[in-house]
Image 1 (cartoon, helix red, strand yellow):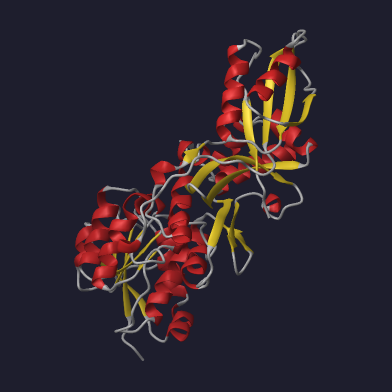
Image 2 (image 1 turned 180 degrees about the vertical axis):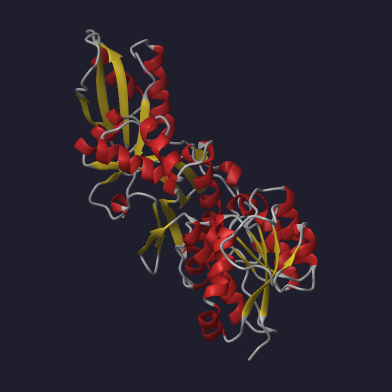
Amino acid sequence: MAEALRVGIAGLGTVGASVARVLRDKAAELTRQCGRDIIVSAVSARDRKRDRGTDLSSANWFDDPVKMAQTAEIDVFVELIGGDEGPARASVKAALEAGRHVVTANKALLAKHGVALAEIAEKKGVLLNYEAAVAGGIPVIKTMREAMAGNSVSRVFGILNGTCNYILTRMEAEGVSFDVVLKDAQRLGYAEADPTFDIEGHDTAHKLSILTSLAFGTRIAANDIYMEGISNITQADIRAAGDLGYRIKLLGVAQRTESGIEQRVHPTMVPTASVIAQVHGVTNAVAIETDILGELLLSGPGAGGNATASAVIGDVADIAKSRPGFQHGPVFGLPAKELKPYKKAQMRSHAGGYFIRLTVHDRIGVFAAIAKRMADNDISLESIVQHAVSGEAAAQKTVILVTHETTEAAVRKAVDGITKDGHLTDKPQVIRIERAG
């Protein structure tokens, strides 16, 4: 049997403690699967006294994760610290430069420094594995890196944040407001005390930027993603979507266009009959559209200690199965130095058009003025109706517009014009209607 694989874990929070516990409890099974023992030989965390639910007495303790990353006592450095700078970045860089394999769940780190870290890994001939960084326990990274050779990807999209999906699911099922569900999500541990990173789309954007690089062979461009969150979604939107045969989901979408790569994160209406519309609660789903395979949909637990730990352990096991002299594949599918510069595309037409909700003054000429603004911007309307909402003031009405295919710029220009005309009594709502499998 090959020598034991020695693992160092930096960060012993919920995920790190779970990883350590599973590696200990499932040791015999992992040895049979990998052909060698996997042992936790070193750990690093801020609090030595905290009970992690597993015996770590046999592991050497390092107060400094960078020193642990550099020690000859480990073969694999598992980074579960979090954050795109500070100890996380310093320790991962140090581990790679020291010739250690790295496993991380840190999407923020990869979104900002992934290509630079990949260059180091490839130069040193070591692995940088990150399955847990995107969609938790769903093996989407392995699928895209290893199982789709020869396929050309045209679009990748999905539900990448369990917190947002949980909130939208409960808003629809129970008819309660965003604020009420958010408080429940915080109480249940699905949302942070400061939920901004999740509900405003930043978490989804980081994950999408990694998938974009894998799908299209481009350098990661997390700062070039059009982004909207779900905090402005109301019960009026949820009900109107249902009446029209749609369900609202926060999607991350990346697709190849004639002018470049389009990346966007925003609330989206998807047909209720589509597969992705059936993904509820904290579950995640990723759809990949290719020329050979067609459309592949992967769905499963996207968050939580067990799902993330499972992905981390899978990455560690892959390293345990590799042998000295084995040529590892590129971190992002192509050698880091061959990744193309990211070329941002203009927001293009969307099959199915746009949903626009306007709360307007109830007076003569409003409908005609709205229709004229749409016509002036070459927007064809599939429907324009008054949508009754209980409790509305008698002096205002809600108007629901559904457009045919059009452009983002045209819709925004038309809505801005309606706003300037003084017809609105509240902020307008614009939601894309997405073609979805």
